[in-house]
Length: 289
Image 1 (cartoon, rainbow, N blue to C red):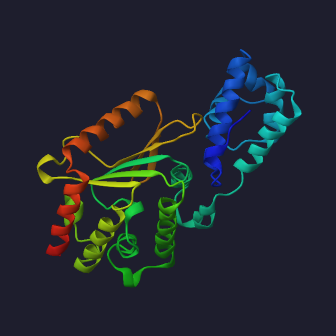
Image 2 (cartoon, one colour; image 1 turned 90 degrees about the vertical axis):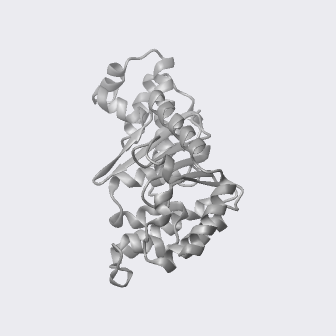
């Protein structure tokens, strides 16, 4: 039977991936080729692939036909699968912000919400989950908070709501590594940066949050750009590397890709100051603002 423990926060993205993984396992156990499954739903092999990867919305009729093909006749198990289909189409809590966020970011928010561990490296800015509202507003308004429009305010509101996952009873482990230049980039001005550094010091006291800073002397060697690695407790959810660029994002989940970025994170953590030394450095930088 499909498992959906990781999707209880309301993430349709996680539900689609979990359901797709279960469908793939059923197909393989029944020794049915993707081409046969495609004929059963009057579709293509590429559609079967997208369904099994959780990259397309699912329809009850298709799932019913596939379950019949895979010899799943137990009524309770079929009902469970169909319930997951319905739930996978329910909007996430972030749907109210859909008009202020690009479509490719919505899947990230859904996956972030069910991750067991979030490991991120930032080369330019404070990681979004650790930003103060004033810092986030300075970014959203291109340095002019007083001129911020409604879209900018909604994007900042979304970021603040995303941060609530760090205070949940089942909060993920956040390990953030940032380049030292981030602390010297005067986003919002001295007062905003001073408050932002105070916030980093406060957040780094939390048992589920670790923060490290890569010093100037070692900057740029281990990684060329920012990225985030999401790890999940559910076996049906593959670890994902998220790479954002100006007009979209990449989601990498192949084993060799995950291993490469995992090794890069290990190198960054070795190059960076330890969490304790990072806190000492943050105090010095704060006093200099």
